[in-house]
Every structure is written in C-alpha cells, then in structure tokens.
Image (tube, rainbow, N blue to C red; front, side, top):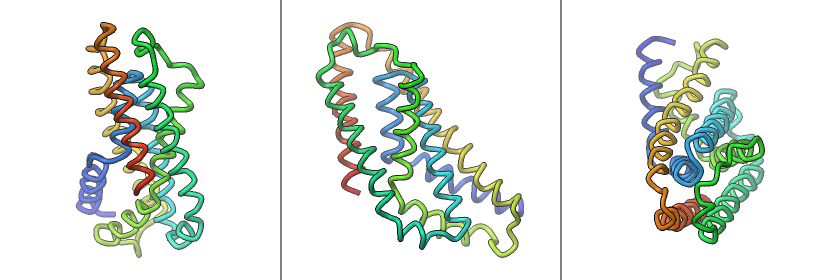
Length: 203
C-alpha cells in the first residue's frame, strides 16, 4: 500500500465516521445523559462493529453478509429498541437521578453492546467499504499486513471521532446540574434517543 493510497483511505474513512448518523447521535446522547465514559465505551463498540464490517468487505464476504442479512437486521432492531427504551426511561426519570453515575461493569458492557449493535445493524456499510476500497486501494497487491492496517485505520478513526463527540457531550452534561436543567436534559436526551432509535429502525 502506497503512502498516497493510505492517506486517501484515512481521509475517506474519517469523513465517513464524522458524518452525522445513528452512531454519532448514539454517542452524543449517551454522553449528555450518562457522561463521557459511557459515551466513549459506546464509541469503542461502534469501532468494533465497523471493524467487523470492513473485515467482511476485505475478505470478499459481501454476498455472505447479504445472505445472512436477517442477523444484521436483528441487531439493528435490538439496538433501536434499546435506544427507545432508554429514551422513555430518561423521560420518566426524576431530576435527581438524571446524572446518576453509571460506570459499573454492567453499564459499560451495555454501552459497548449498544454501540456495536448500531454499527453492525447497518449492513449497507459493508457495501460502502467494498465500493470505496477498489477506488483507493489496489486490492490485487494487498498483503495481510495491508489488510490489518486497513482494519486498524477503521478502528482508530472511529475511536478518535467518537471520542471527540463523547468528550464534547460529556462536557455539556456538566451544565445540567440544577433539578430544572436535569429535567430539561432528561427531556432532550430522551427525545434524541427515541428519535435515533426510530431512525435506525426506519433505515
């Protein structure tokens, strides 16, 4: 892989990761409602899910992924349903509980699985990777090291991009300290989660 091809691929993946979409909204709403750590772990889940998709694309398993599209659909609807559930719970939560620390192992695991399900719930992303790779990379001359580098780029870019969104959302959550602001945060974050879940389910 040439340096030019590597930089071009990094740029394309960064733009794709930074583009507003379900993954970004999931991380932001998690950050505003649950703080930086939970949002960052959700971002790691997004990176892991996207790494699986790009690996399938590298292995030429797009057809296999389309054959078992029902698995991805199940993941998509499970993630969407969980987001709606969280949104409804945020709407009903008391103001005093809005910023309750939730950095337990169970909470972090749920955040990771939520991020991964959002990423894996979009099988069309495999087609994106499969279509953009031949335009930038020479797949005929790619080595195993090149393939691992591509996966590493996808993981790194996703973690960096989602980490920025998580940090910004986490800082914003600090503004919601009074009961009135916490109640407002509940309404805004809950609405955003429900909307994101509906968006994911409708795609």
